[in-house]
Image (cartoon, rainbow, N blue to C red; front, side, top):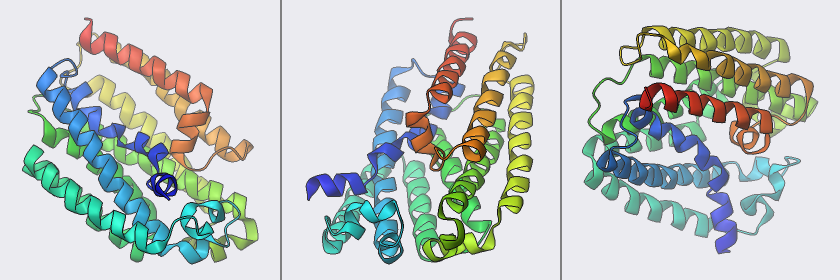
Length: 289
């Protein structure tokens, strides 16, 4: 049962919470020990509060998941994890996490509480509203970035990061919806009601808009952010970011290996290598100049 509970907490999706480290990295404080420790603690707490959301979401979706070709094997719909145990774990995690977050930083606790509330609203109502559902997903990523900002004394963190995060997460969200629509085909609406409000051509238009805007906004960040070197060396990361965007689009349209961004991140070697190269260049530009 503990194994089933841990699986339902979705540790594989904790990779999303790496956005908490954006403030630390892009404000050039990665090697400042107090800031690093604060951010690591915040990352751990964000993982716990996001697990609460996954538990509640799986409880809310248990009937639909039993009819899904993949999700029916999850612990809750398969019966391996009792619903009452999942509820108890969710409540217990909230009781533990929010006071610790407040002790770490009151602003951080406020961000966690906001994240929890909007995602509970998402699980109950908002996930059934086309477009709004993807914007709520994007808001979760922006709140992760904001959580990192509240944990440290930010000096010159660029607001362009918020724009890139918003557009990039919208791109991933619409891409995920397209992959779901392709996988479930004619039965999509019965498995996820919101998919009735989407079509492949419509999602392709959304994806084209936000993917273009993501690359453009990131490119402008590398040029205009105030804390970057005046030689514009950060522009060297643009090809890698563009490749990641194109590669995810390739996976969505040409294969059936795309869907949840966290799954792609953990399985697709070209994307992993591109992220690694981007990180190497960022480290050189920010910390070895």
